[in-house]
Length: 251
Image (cartoon, rainbow, N blue to C red; front, side):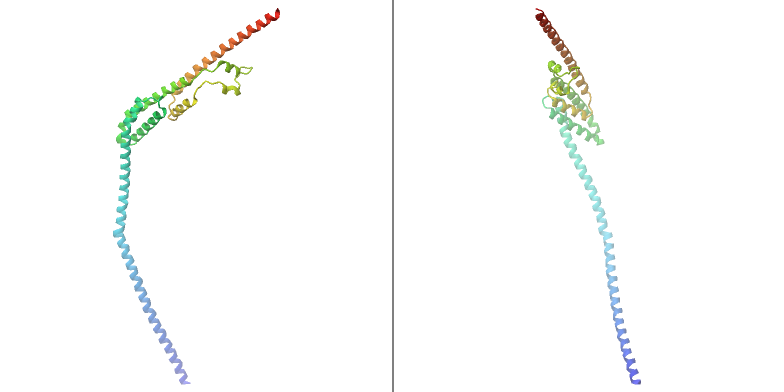
C-alpha cells in the first residue's frame, strides 16, 4: 500500500519535472522571439530615420526641380511663340496692307486671322502690350478693305430681275406666288456674298450690312420701276390690240 503511494508520487514528480522543463524551454523561445521582434523593430525604426534624413529631402528637392522644369518649359514655349509671332507679324501686316482680297479672298482672311491671334498673344503678356498698337491699326484697315470688298462683291453679283418673269409670277391679286419665287433671280453667286458676310459677322463687324441694304434696296426699286413700265407697255399693247379687234369686228 505504501509502495503504491510512493510510485504515484514519483510519477507526479516526473510529470511536474517534465512540465517545468517544457515551460523553461517555451520561456527561452519566447524570449528569443521577443528579442528577434525587438531587433526587427529597431532596424525598421532605423530605416524610417534614414528615409526621413535622406530620401524625404531628396523627394522635396525633386519636387522643386520638377516645378522649375515646368516653369522653364513654359518659358521656352512662350519664347518660341513670341519668336514665331514676331517672325510673321511684319509679313502679315504687309500682306494685309498691300494685299487684294478680290484676287485671293481665302489667303487674305487667313492673314487677318493670324494677325488677330498675334494681337491676342501679345496683349496677354504685359511686356509686349505696347507692340500691338500698330498691329491693331493694320487689322482695322484690313477690316475696312474687306467691307469695301463686300460692297464690290454685292454690286458685281446683283442683277435686276426679269420684268416678264416677275409679272408671270404674280397671281390675280398681284401677290408673288411662292412656287414661282425661285424663278426670280437677283443674285448671280450667293456663295461669294455668304462667305465674306458670315466671316465678318462672326467678328461682330456689321457695317457691311449697310452696303448690302443700299445696293439691294436700289436694285429692288429699279426692278419695281421696270416691272411697272413693262406692265404698262403690256397693258397699252393689249388695249391697242383690243381696239383693233373691235374696229375690225365693226366692219
